[in-house]
Image (cartoon, rainbow, N blue to C red; front, top):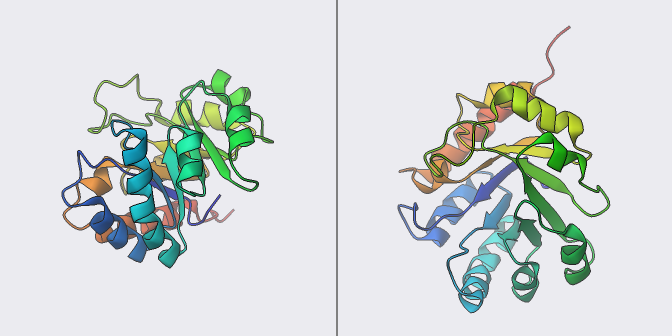
Length: 211
């Protein structure tokens, strides 16, 4: 996985500024892992948006993925794809170029246990907590639910949903490999400051504890 382990997922409907503006600020603040999630756009519109953002990602050394269809990600020349829960990673792997990143969403330990580390690079588990981005989207996993998914998974797990500087210590203690964020950055008055705060909180929480 790209480091630092913070995946920024886009949502232009929540964004307080154009996506390229928000992403430039986030990348400048240290984000090196992002995914375009604009599924309401047509396939050509998603490709066009990805190609608009790609040079910015390349400038900052960001691994840029697309949430959704691996064929769209491939057409846009992106680093990989993030698949919805229940997708077949083998199909995505057959479409994408060698070395492409493939992630997938999971919501419970049974899904996580079925993941093949030869096909999937990482999983995103959520919602960790109640989230303004997707209110009512399934029961919150909480730290215990995240820990169960981590224990079942053979690939690194990122937590998503209600992730903030305040909740990061709890998800880090659950054993996740990193975090994924969307609305908190999209809605932030200062996306760069939000990213810096999240990275600082993650660094502090992920430090090995003295024995």
